[in-house]
Length: 465
Figure 1: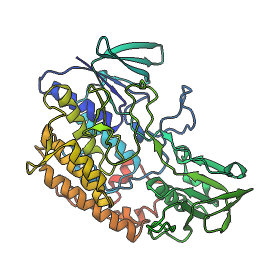
Figure 2 (figure 1 turned 120 degrees about the horizontal axis):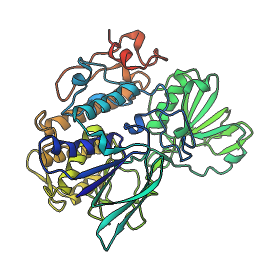
Figure 3 (figure 1 turned 180 degrees about the vertical axis):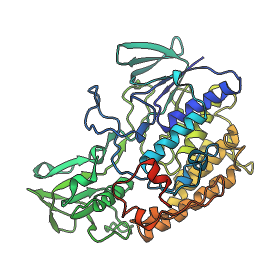
């Protein structure tokens, strides 16, 4: 049996680790081939100064920018079988910089003893077709030397969904005389020092880009979006922004550098950054097996959020809009592995820690009934709990029910902190849901808003000292 894993970012790494566990235990393991377009594993946590196209002339996959720090507690993404404390040798602050999060996923890979000979870096998958005669997938790949084809019995797609921007049509924006780009090409907030910048959007990218711009010296930041209440009246996000950041109804007209907003106010604007999200984009998949979906916390387009409805031997990891990340990715990876190995059946309901059955239809109903953010991470928490129970992943380290309940509570704390002061929530601390250890807080001089230039791993390890 041959299994192809497309993408070696965080979810791809967990898929490699899941199969590697079989090898480590001396159990039957298929031949695994990993196709990774970048020079090394790590996915979105790898920084690349390039925008537009990469060094090989393909569209630039990564949208990582300088000085990015986690916008969620590390305790909510912690692997149950590999803690941050284990990785760093001591408790560390709850909101790591990019390099520390990348280092953690690398540590997870090393701890899992993944076989790097399985991984083909600098290799792009150009086409995946299922041959109805042979009942196998035919993959066309391109490395630095040549294009070639290979066949596989199963395919796991773990390419992520943060590489192809959504570019809405703003009527008249072509008349704007300033600089316009999508946040996928945003690289350094200090480039906008002294500017008036419009940030379009109201989700996580808009929050973080706006905060970064303010932190690094933008004169004025205007967040513009189309959020409305039940009556259809525009309303702000509810965050308490620092002076210099404001919200306005969605921009609607442009002349020279003048931008007019939904409330008919105007501003002279130097730059516009579109934080308008990303597409789920799989150009390498044949149309017969291509996943077409929106960015939602549960994907009804997949069986149990993971298996293609067009082909039962095709799996997708981490394609949901995410509250849960690393630990859910691992649960999904181990579930996909056990489905491939015939240990589990997709038609059988999952069970939570209390023995309650959760069918695909039950998760879809939970998804349809969602109203609040708590409902959203509650759904992903229940899914992760069920995945851990089904596969045994992490059960030697935590009780899945208590683990995910603790993560949900930490998300509650995080949301409250953000709404109290979105500019300093990263200066607070949370407890590990694996070890129980309370993380330290950074010292005041190393608080997020005060610290502009230090974001390496050594600095992170000593933020509280």
